[in-house]
Image (tube, rainbow, N blue to C red; front, top):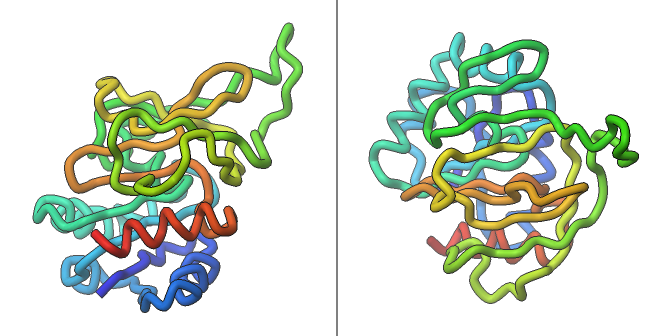
Length: 204
């Protein structure tokens, strides 16, 4: 079963529909038991880091996600779902994340003088892959994906950086650590290139 975690913080139906277009069944789940039973797991998300981690912890979903990851089954984080994998997030204070990938999540400063870019970063940006990464199999480096985010992750170990993009400077666009992979952009909103990402994940 390919499962999408519902913790009331994401555009779940958009992700599910993107898989349906590929002919892949994706089930939206909530219970920790269902999370532990999944064959492949997706953690999407739109919203604030602190609110999201609080929901995951109080519902028991956080522990279930960690248990799932420990079994080496494939997991994909999307946008906020990627940020939550880090040890710390700095949105409205300092908050502890799931701690799967060493590093943190900070806000863009490109809207502060002398910079003049807008935050959130919103729109299509090219993504450059770093080495071999299963999610980007068959995809040309530099392909554009759709981003909507004000924060980005900083892995402590550069070996966990699977792809980068640029918005007033280079930032991490995708990460990979063992069976855990994640993207900052929204593949479900990135047309054919995004569907290829989801197809590659479903094929793992």
